[in-house]
Image 1 (cartoon, rainbow, N blue to C red):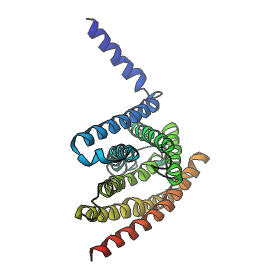
Image 2 (image 1 turned 120 degrees about the vertical axis):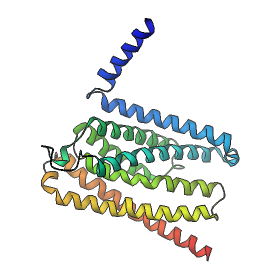
Image 3 (image 1 turned 45 degrees about the horizontal axis):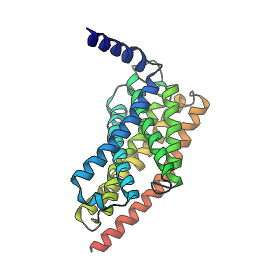
Length: 267
């Protein structure tokens, strides 16, 4: 009876408080942070048990190795959810909603963004803690812009479609991380490194170049709805993607040069 009573109390706590509309953002952020901690520990455990080269890495390299495990897990999660919301969910498609596309949201979309926000908070904390070994100022800027945009989308319910469009760019993260893993373990001359480079090039072209162009096109075609957003959200909808797009172009140019250099060595 005592166990049943505790179970019922826990169920009420989860249903009426943790996952209520008012507590949902905070709950999802905590879930995201816990996901990061679990991913870090699992990456460390699996790597130390099954990868012999992991033990030979320096302390700084092991921290980055585990940190990239976190970003890979988040990338897979947010890519799947973002693609679902943008291309398959009826939340942002069709005219069956009375509200404009820029004001649509749901508990699931808010929870998804909250989990992603928890990741960016945790990862930014690690970047600052280990600065600059996990990334320079461009990574700090990237994470800060992402945090501001995601937080505003969650709390206001505005512009979530464009936030998910930007987050689809995380689909390139696993390939970027795999490139670092292969390089760190001395497999830079392997076929896997070359294939991964090609995949990274294609993924970056689609997710961080073409999709951003589609985002600006969509905002232009729905400008009459975008302009009704709060002034802060309106500027976020254009400034954040614009800054990230510039960063994507710079990084894409580096990817092209790196891939070209690798192909020239092969021949």
